[in-house]
Image 1 (tube, rainbow, N blue to C red):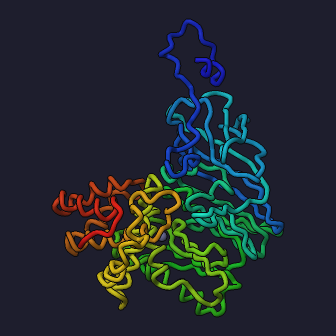
Image 2 (cartoon, rainbow, N blue to C red):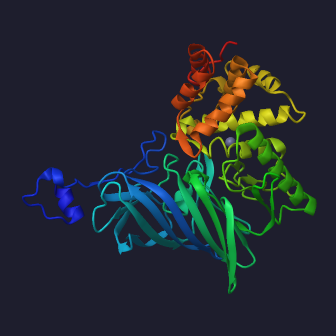
Length: 464
Ligand SMILES: [Zn+2]
């Protein structure tokens, strides 16, 4: 009760204890065993409104306003936020709040009064500095990555906290709005739908919005000198693609990337169900991270050192398929990332076999020939471990699992299974246990459960 008195500023007297809520601090982590510091407890973030100004000296000045709902009586709560950015102010519902920074990435905020469970509040943080990137021995480069002509923010599995205060867990999805102000000779892109551009003085402000729920790991900002192509797909989905001007060697290159994105977005909708978001697209940039990322509504493809060479149809099929599997249907915990990567890899196989490439069976057979002592068989797909998040087993054995399901239940039921998985879980969070329950509806439950246990729940090369 001491915490209550201090935090809520209430005076306890003869009032029965049960009539007064006990205000307690929100947890400093979201409970993900792979990343205990990531995310926080005690509230549900609903919306991020991010206004960020980028300058030629690579510094930013920004204001992030988060709308959240308390899920407990909160005396204080945390956001994830990394140095070296400086926090200037924090308000809760417009009133200055006390804050301190502690631990690996905690911004601890104590509002003037406790927040009652169920109450929706806004927390506004102003900050500035030169954001940094994260270099992780096992998981590579992420966060705010400086490029020759600007910066790209890529957040998987962590990195959002390098440029915005955030509840950095895929379990807490929220809508986003971006107002990005850059010097006039640069462009600024982000997730989702274009919402306008305004020129003022030597700067321009670019607005983008993602009204569907988005995990922080899928938020994206790209600032640089781009050649931008805007259009609509045949089913009227806005398509905005951009290529770094230093990587662009011909107008045909921009057109071909735009058309490939359009074609694969339509293919995805035909194969998996309605496209999940209000816009599609892609960004080709010289980032130097060595990967492409399925940032929501608009993937980023790193092509550093490869001017004139667009990402191929297999890679685009992978990243666009993630819009359904990973982005719209999002694992709650990082150990279940095979639900993203297995599906996206299998989408490569499907797209390939429907467009004159190897069949999925041939891809499966090629991988199955991998020797039994290979790492492919030594990682447990549905719990690979923090450092194996991006191990080949997660991708390839994940895709092989889906192929085994296809063989078991047959063509028609398999595609129904995949489409229904999306339809039932659109905009939500899922676990592997949810997937197992789902799959068991499409055939002999015991056989299907055993198949999944063998392929994703154990190590060792399964017998066929
Ligand atoms: Zn992927």
